[in-house]
Length: 344
Image 1 (cartoon, rainbow, N blue to C red):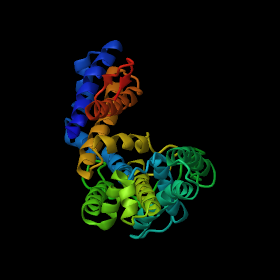
Image 2: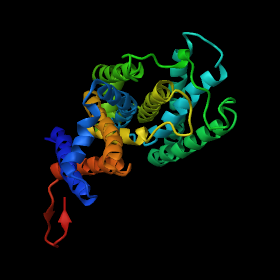
Image 3: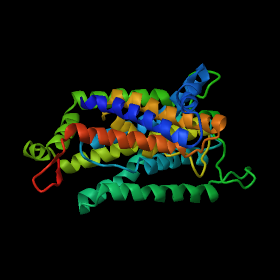
Image 4: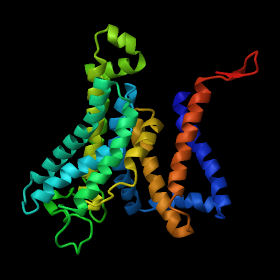
Protein backbone atom coordinates (compact mmCIF):
# COMPACT_ATOMS: atom_id res chain seq x y z
CA UNK A 1 0.00 0.00 0.00
CA UNK A 2 2.85 2.40 0.82
CA UNK A 3 4.03 2.29 -2.80
CA UNK A 4 0.64 3.60 -3.93
CA UNK A 5 0.94 6.78 -1.87
CA UNK A 6 2.75 8.72 -4.64
CA UNK A 7 -0.14 8.01 -7.00
CA UNK A 8 -2.66 9.00 -4.31
CA UNK A 9 -0.71 12.19 -3.61
CA UNK A 10 -0.65 13.05 -7.32
CA UNK A 11 -4.42 12.54 -7.66
CA UNK A 12 -5.11 14.72 -4.61
CA UNK A 13 -2.73 17.38 -5.94
CA UNK A 14 -4.50 17.47 -9.31
CA UNK A 15 -7.91 17.77 -7.62
CA UNK A 16 -6.77 20.59 -5.33
CA UNK A 17 -4.91 22.36 -8.12
CA UNK A 18 -8.18 22.52 -10.07
CA UNK A 19 -9.60 24.51 -7.16
CA UNK A 20 -6.57 26.81 -7.22
CA UNK A 21 -6.93 27.39 -10.96
CA UNK A 22 -10.64 28.14 -10.53
CA UNK A 23 -9.83 30.63 -7.78
CA UNK A 24 -7.38 32.34 -10.14
CA UNK A 25 -10.12 32.65 -12.75
CA UNK A 26 -8.71 30.07 -15.16
CA UNK A 27 -10.51 27.10 -16.68
CA UNK A 28 -9.06 24.19 -14.62
CA UNK A 29 -9.29 21.69 -17.48
CA UNK A 30 -7.42 24.03 -19.81
CA UNK A 31 -4.86 24.74 -17.09
CA UNK A 32 -4.20 21.04 -16.54
CA UNK A 33 -3.92 20.54 -20.30
CA UNK A 34 -1.28 23.26 -20.42
CA UNK A 35 0.50 21.71 -17.46
CA UNK A 36 0.63 18.08 -18.52
CA UNK A 37 -0.06 17.75 -22.25
CA UNK A 38 0.95 20.85 -24.19
CA UNK A 39 4.61 20.88 -23.03
CA UNK A 40 5.28 17.38 -24.40
CA UNK A 41 3.00 17.19 -27.42
CA UNK A 42 5.96 17.07 -29.82
CA UNK A 43 9.45 15.60 -30.00
CA UNK A 44 11.18 18.81 -28.96
CA UNK A 45 8.94 19.12 -25.88
CA UNK A 46 9.68 15.50 -24.91
CA UNK A 47 13.41 16.18 -25.22
CA UNK A 48 13.05 19.29 -23.02
CA UNK A 49 11.38 17.09 -20.42
CA UNK A 50 14.52 14.94 -20.29
CA UNK A 51 16.73 18.03 -20.13
CA UNK A 52 14.81 19.32 -17.11
CA UNK A 53 14.70 15.89 -15.47
CA UNK A 54 18.47 15.30 -15.72
CA UNK A 55 19.62 17.51 -12.80
CA UNK A 56 16.61 16.45 -10.73
CA UNK A 57 17.43 12.75 -11.13
CA UNK A 58 21.15 13.26 -10.45
CA UNK A 59 20.49 15.23 -7.27
CA UNK A 60 17.69 12.96 -6.08
CA UNK A 61 19.64 9.74 -6.60
CA UNK A 62 22.40 11.11 -4.38
CA UNK A 63 20.00 12.35 -1.72
CA UNK A 64 18.08 9.06 -1.66
CA UNK A 65 21.15 7.14 -0.55
CA UNK A 66 21.57 9.43 2.45
CA UNK A 67 17.87 9.41 3.28
CA UNK A 68 17.95 5.60 3.38
CA UNK A 69 20.58 5.88 6.12
CA UNK A 70 18.67 8.65 7.95
CA UNK A 71 21.26 11.20 6.87
CA UNK A 72 19.27 14.29 5.93
CA UNK A 73 21.21 16.21 3.33
CA UNK A 74 19.06 19.25 2.46
CA UNK A 75 21.85 21.17 0.75
CA UNK A 76 21.93 19.64 -2.73
CA UNK A 77 21.24 23.08 -4.20
CA UNK A 78 24.48 24.41 -2.73
CA UNK A 79 26.41 21.30 -3.74
CA UNK A 80 25.08 21.69 -7.28
CA UNK A 81 26.31 25.28 -7.26
CA UNK A 82 29.78 24.28 -6.03
CA UNK A 83 29.96 21.60 -8.69
CA UNK A 84 29.21 24.25 -11.30
CA UNK A 85 31.87 26.52 -9.80
CA UNK A 86 34.56 23.83 -9.76
CA UNK A 87 33.71 22.45 -13.19
CA UNK A 88 33.07 25.82 -14.81
CA UNK A 89 36.17 27.25 -13.14
CA UNK A 90 38.33 24.78 -15.04
CA UNK A 91 37.07 26.21 -18.31
CA UNK A 92 37.46 29.80 -17.07
CA UNK A 93 41.17 29.22 -16.48
CA UNK A 94 41.66 27.03 -19.56
CA UNK A 95 39.30 28.81 -21.95
CA UNK A 96 41.93 28.86 -24.70
CA UNK A 97 42.60 25.12 -24.45
CA UNK A 98 40.91 22.85 -27.00
CA UNK A 99 41.20 19.32 -25.61
CA UNK A 100 39.01 16.22 -25.43
CA UNK A 101 40.00 15.95 -21.77
CA UNK A 102 38.53 19.32 -20.82
CA UNK A 103 34.91 18.17 -20.40
CA UNK A 104 35.80 14.96 -18.47
CA UNK A 105 37.99 17.13 -16.23
CA UNK A 106 35.08 19.49 -15.64
CA UNK A 107 32.78 16.60 -14.71
CA UNK A 108 35.39 15.18 -12.33
CA UNK A 109 36.03 18.55 -10.71
CA UNK A 110 32.30 19.14 -10.43
CA UNK A 111 31.89 15.89 -8.50
CA UNK A 112 34.83 16.83 -6.27
CA UNK A 113 33.43 20.31 -5.63
CA UNK A 114 30.00 19.01 -4.66
CA UNK A 115 31.54 16.32 -2.44
CA UNK A 116 33.81 18.83 -0.69
CA UNK A 117 30.85 21.10 0.04
CA UNK A 118 28.89 18.13 1.42
CA UNK A 119 31.95 17.15 3.44
CA UNK A 120 31.50 20.23 5.65
CA UNK A 121 28.18 18.99 7.14
CA UNK A 122 29.69 15.48 7.33
CA UNK A 123 32.61 16.77 9.40
CA UNK A 124 30.38 18.88 11.65
CA UNK A 125 28.00 15.94 12.15
CA UNK A 126 30.63 13.34 12.99
CA UNK A 127 32.88 15.67 15.00
CA UNK A 128 30.42 17.91 16.84
CA UNK A 129 27.08 16.13 16.27
CA UNK A 130 25.79 19.23 14.48
CA UNK A 131 22.45 18.79 12.74
CA UNK A 132 23.18 18.13 9.07
CA UNK A 133 19.80 19.55 8.05
CA UNK A 134 20.75 23.02 9.30
CA UNK A 135 24.39 23.00 8.23
CA UNK A 136 23.75 21.71 4.71
CA UNK A 137 20.85 24.13 4.23
CA UNK A 138 22.80 27.20 5.40
CA UNK A 139 25.67 26.33 3.08
CA UNK A 140 23.30 26.71 0.13
CA UNK A 141 23.25 30.46 0.64
CA UNK A 142 27.02 30.60 1.08
CA UNK A 143 27.47 28.75 -2.22
CA UNK A 144 25.07 31.09 -4.03
CA UNK A 145 26.89 34.17 -2.74
CA UNK A 146 30.25 32.65 -3.65
CA UNK A 147 29.09 32.11 -7.23
CA UNK A 148 27.77 35.68 -7.38
CA UNK A 149 31.09 37.01 -6.07
CA UNK A 150 33.05 35.17 -8.75
CA UNK A 151 30.74 36.12 -11.61
CA UNK A 152 30.64 39.78 -10.60
CA UNK A 153 34.40 39.76 -10.04
CA UNK A 154 37.36 37.78 -11.41
CA UNK A 155 35.37 35.37 -13.59
CA UNK A 156 33.29 38.00 -15.40
CA UNK A 157 33.59 37.84 -19.18
CA UNK A 158 35.92 40.69 -20.27
CA UNK A 159 33.99 40.89 -23.55
CA UNK A 160 30.56 40.62 -21.95
CA UNK A 161 29.72 44.35 -21.79
CA UNK A 162 29.98 44.27 -17.99
CA UNK A 163 27.15 41.75 -17.59
CA UNK A 164 27.59 39.35 -14.63
CA UNK A 165 28.38 36.21 -16.59
CA UNK A 166 31.40 34.12 -17.51
CA UNK A 167 32.73 33.44 -20.98
CA UNK A 168 30.52 31.26 -23.13
CA UNK A 169 31.78 27.70 -22.95
CA UNK A 170 33.66 26.44 -25.96
CA UNK A 171 32.65 23.32 -27.87
CA UNK A 172 35.22 21.20 -26.01
CA UNK A 173 33.67 22.30 -22.68
CA UNK A 174 30.06 21.69 -23.75
CA UNK A 175 28.05 18.51 -23.29
CA UNK A 176 27.64 16.81 -26.67
CA UNK A 177 24.09 16.71 -27.98
CA UNK A 178 22.33 13.36 -28.15
CA UNK A 179 19.60 14.45 -30.56
CA UNK A 180 20.23 17.10 -33.20
CA UNK A 181 17.76 19.96 -33.24
CA UNK A 182 17.14 19.69 -29.49
CA UNK A 183 18.99 20.54 -26.28
CA UNK A 184 19.14 16.91 -25.12
CA UNK A 185 22.73 16.36 -24.06
CA UNK A 186 25.16 13.82 -22.63
CA UNK A 187 24.21 14.74 -19.06
CA UNK A 188 21.08 12.60 -19.47
CA UNK A 189 23.33 9.59 -20.13
CA UNK A 190 25.24 10.43 -16.94
CA UNK A 191 21.94 10.45 -15.02
CA UNK A 192 21.01 7.00 -16.36
CA UNK A 193 24.47 5.66 -15.45
CA UNK A 194 24.08 7.14 -11.95
CA UNK A 195 20.71 5.43 -11.52
CA UNK A 196 22.03 2.03 -12.62
CA UNK A 197 25.20 2.38 -10.54
CA UNK A 198 23.27 3.36 -7.42
CA UNK A 199 20.84 0.48 -7.86
CA UNK A 200 23.73 -1.98 -8.14
CA UNK A 201 25.46 -0.46 -5.12
CA UNK A 202 22.38 -0.69 -2.92
CA UNK A 203 21.37 -4.16 -4.09
CA UNK A 204 24.68 -5.95 -4.57
CA UNK A 205 27.38 -4.42 -2.37
CA UNK A 206 28.27 -4.52 1.32
CA UNK A 207 28.16 -0.74 1.64
CA UNK A 208 24.63 -0.74 0.24
CA UNK A 209 23.62 -3.34 2.83
CA UNK A 210 25.23 -1.25 5.58
CA UNK A 211 23.32 1.84 4.46
CA UNK A 212 20.00 0.00 4.62
CA UNK A 213 20.75 -1.59 8.00
CA UNK A 214 21.98 1.65 9.60
CA UNK A 215 18.87 3.43 8.32
CA UNK A 216 16.40 0.77 9.44
CA UNK A 217 18.00 -0.35 12.72
CA UNK A 218 21.01 1.70 13.89
CA UNK A 219 21.54 -0.40 17.01
CA UNK A 220 21.55 -3.61 15.00
CA UNK A 221 24.04 -2.03 12.61
CA UNK A 222 26.34 -1.04 15.47
CA UNK A 223 26.06 -4.54 16.94
CA UNK A 224 27.09 -5.96 13.56
CA UNK A 225 30.16 -3.71 13.54
CA UNK A 226 28.97 -1.18 10.97
CA UNK A 227 30.37 2.32 11.49
CA UNK A 228 27.66 4.97 11.52
CA UNK A 229 30.23 7.74 11.07
CA UNK A 230 31.61 6.12 7.93
CA UNK A 231 28.09 5.83 6.52
CA UNK A 232 27.45 9.51 7.27
CA UNK A 233 30.64 10.47 5.44
CA UNK A 234 29.94 8.17 2.51
CA UNK A 235 26.31 9.18 1.96
CA UNK A 236 26.97 12.90 2.24
CA UNK A 237 30.00 12.78 -0.07
CA UNK A 238 28.09 10.62 -2.55
CA UNK A 239 25.10 12.96 -2.54
CA UNK A 240 27.36 15.97 -2.93
CA UNK A 241 29.20 14.38 -5.85
CA UNK A 242 25.94 13.59 -7.67
CA UNK A 243 24.70 17.15 -7.13
CA UNK A 244 28.06 18.51 -8.32
CA UNK A 245 27.79 16.52 -11.55
CA UNK A 246 24.26 17.91 -11.96
CA UNK A 247 25.72 21.41 -11.67
CA UNK A 248 28.29 20.73 -14.39
CA UNK A 249 25.63 19.19 -16.63
CA UNK A 250 23.63 22.41 -16.36
CA UNK A 251 26.37 24.96 -17.00
CA UNK A 252 28.00 22.90 -19.76
CA UNK A 253 24.63 21.86 -21.15
CA UNK A 254 21.57 24.09 -21.56
CA UNK A 255 23.05 27.15 -19.78
CA UNK A 256 26.41 27.20 -21.59
CA UNK A 257 28.17 29.52 -19.14
CA UNK A 258 28.33 30.49 -15.48
CA UNK A 259 25.59 32.88 -14.36
CA UNK A 260 24.67 34.26 -10.92
CA UNK A 261 21.75 31.81 -10.89
CA UNK A 262 22.11 28.47 -12.63
CA UNK A 263 19.28 26.52 -11.01
CA UNK A 264 15.59 27.30 -10.44
CA UNK A 265 15.74 25.20 -7.27
CA UNK A 266 16.58 21.75 -8.64
CA UNK A 267 18.39 20.81 -5.43
CA UNK A 268 15.32 21.47 -3.30
CA UNK A 269 12.87 19.91 -5.76
CA UNK A 270 15.10 16.81 -5.78
CA UNK A 271 14.04 16.20 -2.17
CA UNK A 272 10.45 15.82 -3.39
CA UNK A 273 11.68 13.63 -6.26
CA UNK A 274 13.53 11.31 -3.87
CA UNK A 275 10.51 10.76 -1.63
CA UNK A 276 8.01 10.63 -4.47
CA UNK A 277 10.18 7.88 -5.99
CA UNK A 278 10.14 6.00 -2.65
CA UNK A 279 13.96 6.36 -2.43
CA UNK A 280 14.25 3.73 -5.17
CA UNK A 281 16.42 4.44 -8.25
CA UNK A 282 13.73 3.38 -10.72
CA UNK A 283 11.03 5.31 -8.89
CA UNK A 284 13.25 8.39 -8.92
CA UNK A 285 13.33 8.33 -12.73
CA UNK A 286 9.54 8.56 -12.97
CA UNK A 287 9.33 11.10 -10.15
CA UNK A 288 12.04 13.19 -11.82
CA UNK A 289 10.12 13.21 -15.09
CA UNK A 290 6.94 14.28 -13.26
CA UNK A 291 8.64 17.15 -11.42
CA UNK A 292 10.37 18.20 -14.64
CA UNK A 293 6.95 18.33 -16.27
CA UNK A 294 5.77 20.76 -13.56
CA UNK A 295 8.59 23.14 -14.55
CA UNK A 296 7.67 22.93 -18.23
CA UNK A 297 3.96 23.09 -17.45
CA UNK A 298 4.41 26.11 -15.22
CA UNK A 299 6.25 27.95 -18.00
CA UNK A 300 3.61 26.97 -20.56
CA UNK A 301 0.72 28.03 -18.31
CA UNK A 302 2.49 31.32 -17.59
CA UNK A 303 2.79 32.08 -21.31
CA UNK A 304 -0.56 30.77 -22.54
CA UNK A 305 -2.84 31.51 -19.59
CA UNK A 306 -1.06 34.33 -17.78
CA UNK A 307 -0.67 32.37 -14.57
CA UNK A 308 2.01 33.54 -12.12
CA UNK A 309 5.34 31.70 -12.15
CA UNK A 310 4.79 30.78 -8.49
CA UNK A 311 2.14 28.26 -9.56
CA UNK A 312 4.93 25.74 -10.22
CA UNK A 313 6.13 25.96 -6.63
CA UNK A 314 2.57 25.69 -5.35
CA UNK A 315 2.02 22.52 -7.37
CA UNK A 316 5.29 20.97 -6.18
CA UNK A 317 4.52 21.93 -2.58
CA UNK A 318 1.10 20.28 -2.75
CA UNK A 319 2.68 17.08 -4.07
CA UNK A 320 5.03 16.93 -1.07
CA UNK A 321 2.28 17.85 1.40
CA UNK A 322 -0.12 15.18 0.18
CA UNK A 323 2.68 12.61 -0.07
CA UNK A 324 3.60 13.12 3.59
CA UNK A 325 -0.05 13.20 4.62
CA UNK A 326 -0.81 9.94 2.80
CA UNK A 327 2.23 8.27 4.36
CA UNK A 328 1.16 9.30 7.85
CA UNK A 329 -2.48 8.29 7.44
CA UNK A 330 -1.55 4.92 5.94
CA UNK A 331 1.13 4.10 8.52
CA UNK A 332 -0.80 5.32 11.59
CA UNK A 333 -4.36 5.12 12.81
CA UNK A 334 -5.66 8.00 14.88
CA UNK A 335 -8.11 7.41 17.70
CA UNK A 336 -9.51 9.34 20.65
CA UNK A 337 -8.22 8.13 24.03
CA UNK A 338 -10.13 8.31 27.28
CA UNK A 339 -9.08 11.91 27.91
CA UNK A 340 -10.49 12.95 24.56
CA UNK A 341 -7.08 13.60 23.04
CA UNK A 342 -6.05 12.30 19.66
CA UNK A 343 -3.39 9.56 19.74
CA UNK A 344 -1.64 7.78 16.89
